[in-house]
Image 1 (cartoon, rainbow, N blue to C red):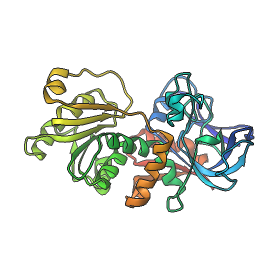
Image 2 (cartoon, one colour):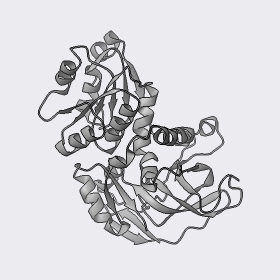
Image 3 (cartoon, rainbow, N blue to C red):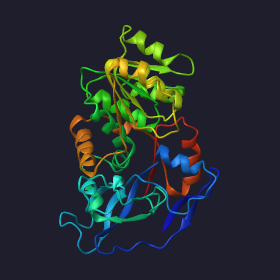
Image 4 (cartoon, one colour):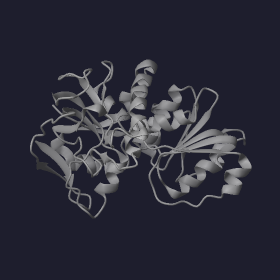
Amino acid sequence: MRGVIFEGNRKASIREFPDPKAGPGEAVIQIKASGLCGTDLHRYRGDDPVTMITGHEPCGVIAELGSGSPKTLNVGDRVMCHHYSGCGICEICSMGYEQLCPTGHVTYGGGTGHGANADYILVPSRTLVHLHDSLSFEEGAAISCGTGTAWNGLQKMNISGRDTVVVFGQGPVGLSGTLSAKAMGARVIGVDVVSERLALSKELGADHVVNASNDDPVSAILELTGGVGASASLETSGNPTARQQVLQCLAPFGRCCYVGVGGPAEIDFNRDVIFKVITIFGSWTFSKAELIEISRFFVETGAPLSKLITHRYSIDQAEQAFQEFDNSTTGKCVFVME
């Protein structure tokens, strides 16, 4: 089968791999869609090659089931995958957070296990979640990491129609945050430095957008909120300056959630946290149970998740796909398999 790897220094290529076979407790998924995620770019841009198959947003149909798989699964089922595997039996794994397993974990498509930018993927069958009939494979791929990550950050803050939410970064995760927060009833302000992404943010429901390359986001947000500040903020970019501003723009008693992966940032905890009584959350993707909840949210709200997906590629277009995604002007990019 075909699989996409990174050769280092922004070079993606296709290699041939043996077709996987399901052992006990395993499933082979025929991939129908696989999303590109911002964390893929960290490895794509790096010097070191990634020889395992990339892609951690799998969505497809079950092609083979090993013995001992859950009886609720059948060959031919449409499924998403919670793309981590821990020990599977400790307290944290039992909560569905296998990525936090204290004995270590495998991330499928994250460099420790073969991923979904391929014709097939082999995963533990316990990691699979049924894809609702009203959701496309492309939408399921988006939910499986990036979109779900943004949604779970908002859910931790209990976002509702009472809130003004600022989403820093309008890449695929941030755009998912804008879409989700609007569907939760909030007033939404999107912040980015790329005009194309700010335009898409408006299309996905942002009430206001701020181009941080032209305007100071904190000043703009204070002006938009009558000098009060926002009640909640979501940081998706990992940018050190944004990690400061996401706190500075908040009103007293505000909530902030960090989901963007990046380097260290300097924070004035007295001024921006303690003396404003701010609540800070960190969130790393979601649990398997939350993956089910996220899927249900998009089914029940009818939020236009398909508008998030702006670029579609065949797996043979892998080099082009990552080059265009790396330009940071796209919405969600997805490999679509025939």
